Length: 111
Image (cartoon, rainbow, N blue to C red; front, side, top):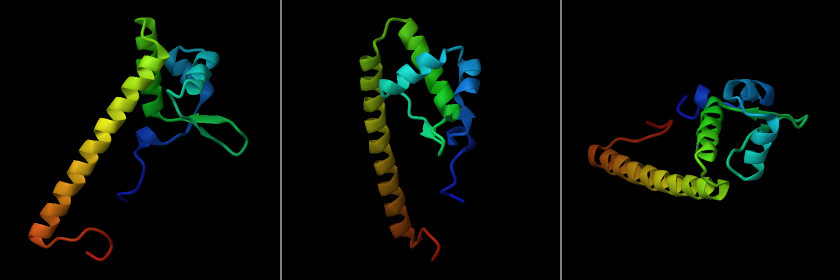
């Protein structure tokens, strides 16, 4: 159950619904995808599918664009945040591993 994707991250929302939720046009949404700011999944038929997290991100992107921030600056900030999150995840895993080793705990199906 630990590997299940949160409902916020499941890519199930169509571009039409995203358009209604965000107030953005389909063209704007596709543009943000072209600029590598958003990454929808594609169905076998080629339709885009978005998550609730994507919707939140699109609103954040639109607000930044409205404030005059360029798409390349937004992408740069996203990469920086991603890198920082990766560092934090690695640190958290290392600490968890140290705690597990200290207390003789194991993770996974054999525990």
